Image (cartoon, rainbow, N blue to C red; front, side, top):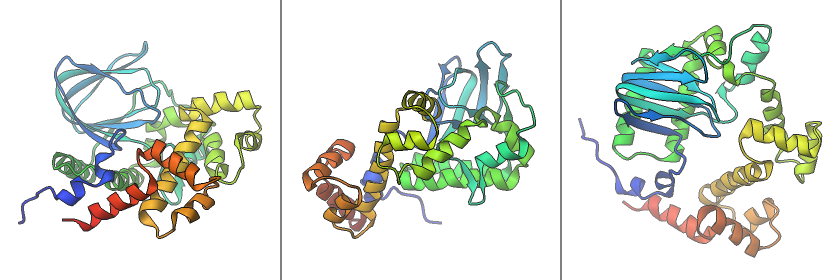
Length: 290
């Protein structure tokens, strides 16, 4: 069997090095260490080794043991304390969770909205053999510096599919109960309409909120302001167009309603720390080299 070796062309790729907010992290924590997740995304936390005590506000502590995993809601008050040296994998969840093409998270809410689950309690699920294999592959890839955002996004989708395939709707409903609320309806409206509106006022109108109420609701659901969120989503799509399409920069600039090439350049420098020409050139070079 061929031994694994890091390939330079992958390590130098901007997708592999741009890991300010990685989708997936492999964490090692020492006994007595305390940590928490204060992010705008929920996290799945898988425990591979050790023991971790989980606490939430005034509720009774629960101990996460190997071969189980926990949902950490975004902007939470969970505190995690390591009881025995621990190895963990943290997977950042997308704002819009789809277990597969035909099974979005909100379907759990619709199927079980009459059911009452204490969403403040900690709910664990047991790791099955398929997810165990998935975790082993993730740890190995991270240890070999394969941290490509494209690859990690695929693995993020894969783990969601495994949840769909191997756990019942009742188990998933209980597990994801901290995220199941009417906020899902609001977030869906945003995803369905943000690209077609001209400004934030129009987007607020679609949700039937006043502008001040819309901004408060948006910050509660997404963790950031609507202006910042829309700019980030726009940056993701433009990044793809620059690196993965044959469109000219003028075509991309016009498609995303920039007033001039100079404004498009300025946007790219701010969001990617380089002009579009350099970004495309570097990506092409990293793919063709090695």
